[in-house]
Image (cartoon, rainbow, N blue to C red; front, side, top):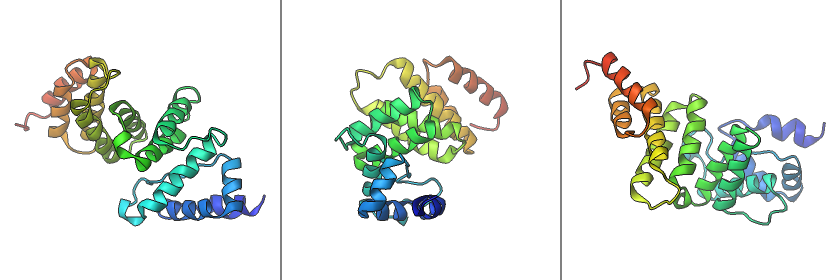
Length: 206
């Protein structure tokens, strides 16, 4: 086991991840080993304040992740991060790696995050029981779904976004907001069933 395996891999904790990733990105030898082993570091670790790291360091980590996933693609962009994230999620069922790439895309250019990708990221976080983080992402997805023109955003998918948002809000401890999200998911029968259940269990809500 070499130095990289012994030291860097084991030292990557949530509150150190971005700082270590930025250091790896700036060191040619570590950079090469990181990419060769296809390791990934979240540029926005869960449970760590976004203000803990500089935007520059977050971007270094996001670009490093892209190289690790597709070192020969020559493309380091939010579009590439989203595309490789979908491949990892759909074909390899590697949702943890997909989550890192979707977050990397957001770090590189948050305006490029479409409702579909935000919903994917939010659903991954929801399934990982990171409810507050999932709710924050899904709120962005719902907002963009109302504001942007996206030919791939069907009524069915929009209903799923609001349904996922309702579930995240409910588990995060916001039943009133969850009910509002479920009510907005008019084309989602599961969300409507959840809304009916929530109404029965929350008679004290206005």
